[in-house]
View (spheres, rainbow, N blue to C red):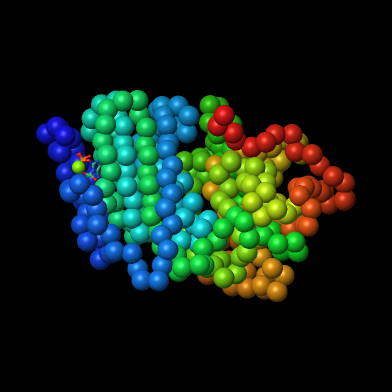
Length: 316
Ligand code: ADP
Ligand code: MG
């Protein structure tokens, strides 16, 4: 490790987040030492953001820092886990002070909201790439998984759909409001909602690649089908305003990047959701029901079937 690296870590990362009592040893040694809470399982997840793929090369570095953590926290939310620690592997073309300072400010803003401690990482030179790893905890045996949905469960989504994809489509041109831009650049991980759904939801997934792909993954893992009522989809206002049905649904079902939760709840527990929605400050909308089959059926308000024409965001 060069003097430059030590200096960068000391200046930007060593004190990025406030200390947590469960961090026995943080940044500076060969590994961090962490104290998991008794009776808990650890939920661990990692995601990489690559320049030119996951964000534009000229994206605001504060947004990149924020989003790198947001997409990781969204995975913990989908497991119902409480975030605790994060590790950051950063590959940079150069030690650009402005970039590092802004990136850290964005990352810190969200880390503080969720009391996440940055406990280690790695620093290297190369094309800009950000890998974040997050570790959370969940009382043993209570995590929300993809494979627990049962026929008859109500299917719900948090928040609104389609806004991030519409923002991406509008990015180059005019008409991109600040509110819409934030849906793409600063998604809100539904951490409190995920925790509150432990013991209530049978299954959950976060919508990173679009409802079509992600509900499909949940259904496959649970070996069930689903019947979705298109008129009930909570579309982001700007998406709902689009005249063309196919275009609206493309943003809502296949756009991705919304980072809302999709989850399944047994009928006898559905009455608990109003309280959870109020506590977490996010709408929870019933969009359909799990079926015994293996197909996803999308229905219009008049009962006619709809065949989505895209498969969501696929990397390969
Ligand atoms: P080693 O060579 O032993 O793997 P490093 O030189 O990579 O250690 O890092 C020294 C210390 O700084 C370690 O505690 C490591 O976790 C931490 N660290 C390195 N890069 C980062 C980073 N980008 N963010 C946070 N901590 C980092
Ligand atoms: Mg070492």
